[in-house]
Amino acid sequence: MKSDLVIVYHRQPYEEVETPEGTVYRENASPNGIVPTLKGFLGKANRGAWVAWKEAEDTSNPGFEPVIEISDSFGTYDVSRLPLTKEHVKSFYHVTSKEAFWPILHGFKERYNYDPVDWPTFRHVNWAFAEAAAEQATDDAVIWVHDYNLWLVPAYLRQLKPNATICFFHHTPFPGPDMFNVLPWRNEIVESLLACDSVGFHIPRYAQNFAAVARSVTGARLIEEEDTPPALSATGVALNDRRVPLTLEYKGQAVAIHTSPVGVNYEHIESLAHSEDVRARVAEIRSDLGDCKLCLSVSRTDYTKGNIEQLEAFERLLQRRPELHGKVRLMLVSVGANRNMTAYAEVQERIESLVGRINGSYGSLEWQPVALISQAIPLAQLVAYYAAADFASITPLADGLNLVASEFCAARDAEHPGALILSEFAGCAVLLEGAIPVNPFSHASMDAALDQALAMEPEEAASRMQALQRSARTWDIGAWTEAEMAHFQKLRAARCPSVTPLPGTRPAA
Image (cartoon, rainbow, N blue to C red; front, side, top):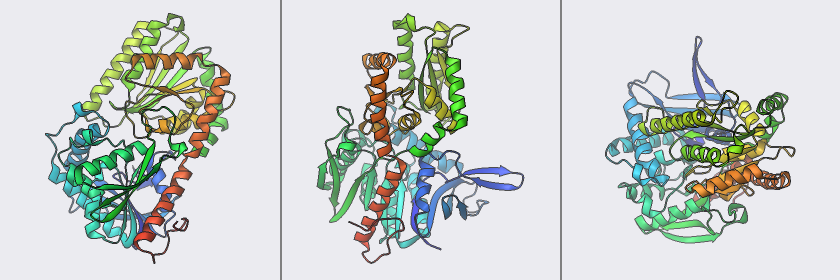
């Protein structure tokens, strides 16, 4: 049965576990993260499908069913598993996407590596994704493609499904022309994105950058924009943009530029924080801390995340303020994402070296200044640390959005409001009012932010956290889902006026 909503994302929408009884498809343990967030859309369609890749030694005889039906709490939907060899995955994902695209998207031109890229393989994999999506989709389906490693899929889909509503969403930053145009494949990438009905971004700055790149590369014209809504425009933040683009025109076709920040499952985090087990764990953590203050930082191990700068700032704090020895701790959760990649291994080694140096220089039998956690923490335990910490410090050098900051806010209560240090270069900084803004490239800014968080009076902390929680609630996962479904319906109605609306959507405006 064909589907009227097809989601195209590189990861499968479940955890595949081998047991003595056979393969089991388990729902993701956490309701947060992009996979469970996107799965929430599948239940809103008459029939939904998901396209992802699965490793196979022989793509012509992969040893698994290419399409399976899944029934879970999100509904019943098809999963199309595209067989890719280990060599395909390395070339398309670890090399082209991570060594060429990722550094440019995040502004690290010096880390860009063109030499090993096999562009024909990237095209081949993207074409295979497009074919798999087309096979699952009705002729007038909404096909929703996610993230930069599938940049060429829209153009191929437009050939295969000319009447489909094709949407693309970026979960990373999007740079301006001076940075993006380093990519020698820029024309092919941008032409593909302009084959979409809609190209989506988290915040206005990324949307403006894309409009500028499209104009630079293809001559596309910006024909509609508006003032940025106040809720998307925090005051004085580096990524703020006063105008948000709405429509590009290219080759006589209108392409919507859609700005819609994803959120967290706020109510679930809040509920977990108030559960009996988590509250008991919070009490244990605070008892163990005594009068020692806890700074919490959570991210992946990546040169974009600012973990090294975070540790260096904490080391300077201990150098500058010896009276804090034994009185403050940093818990750094830095989870490795691509352990086989040299760039990430180097970052991990540097993190471990810094932690060892700080603890060796300042620690004692009774007090270790830094606790480094390099394994993923179950959500309930993480929420306990969100609630127990005195403040969080989220300081990426570049980040598409960052949902950890919102999760931290959702876990706080009025009795222990806490404080949030937040990099101006995290996309969520334009959404979350009340954080202590910090420039992670400035030692003075990082030092001042730590001092401010440590000295913050309860009244100020409560006021700031109330503002932060209002913002995080405004941009929760429910708001994003509703906005995206309404956007799909509007686009679909414009392309095919007689088509049946997707379930759960409002009539097109």
